[in-house]
Image (cartoon, rainbow, N blue to C red; front, top):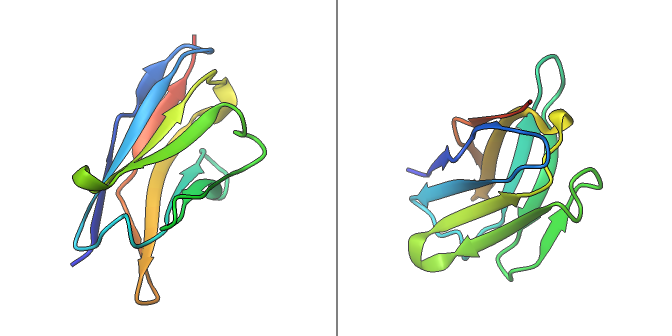
Length: 115
């Protein structure tokens, strides 16, 4: 059974930083892509960043240069380092992977950027 568990969200002031974690079980993050998504109130879920099995990463234009996705294979964990946070980054953040054509999502972690 594949499970993803996010953590690390919270309240932060504009310009601040947070690091989100996505711990996987039932699959290896080193052999699958893991994506980060977010959903703000009243908006559709949107893609934020991805790290693929080979280690390459990709980012949405809105977070390019501010967010960084990384992976710790020993801990089977993917991280999302978020810097220079803006109020518009406020959302529930989810990690997602796909194993044998089945998509798996974590439960999400709330990030609120506000003064």
